[in-house]
Amino acid sequence: MGRNLQFISESIDGDRELAMIVRDPRADPERRAASVELLDQVEDALRELPEHYRVVVWLRDGEELSYQEIANVLDIPIGTVRSRLARARDALRRIVEI
Image (cartoon, rainbow, N blue to C red):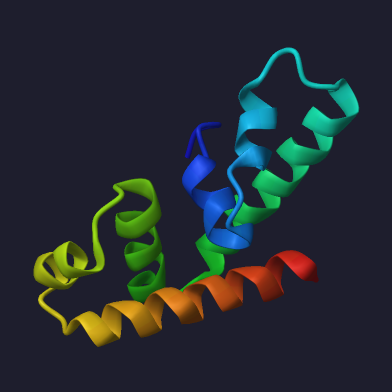
């Protein structure tokens, strides 16, 4: 994964500010360093997720597919998409907080 991780930070806290700080060369260096460190933790956390969670997170936040589009791509019910995404985000929060 590269440094363009806006989708990951949004998955964790619902806020795009973190990724924008990382990419903004005018941002305070301390704040950028902290943001980069958190994004590295999130990348590591994503690797720890089971594939069926990781894929749903990627399709939703990376590819910006709708829940219905994800359900169609994976051939699963939309409720399963929602539950996997919620569980994946909860798992990411727990892993990053450790």
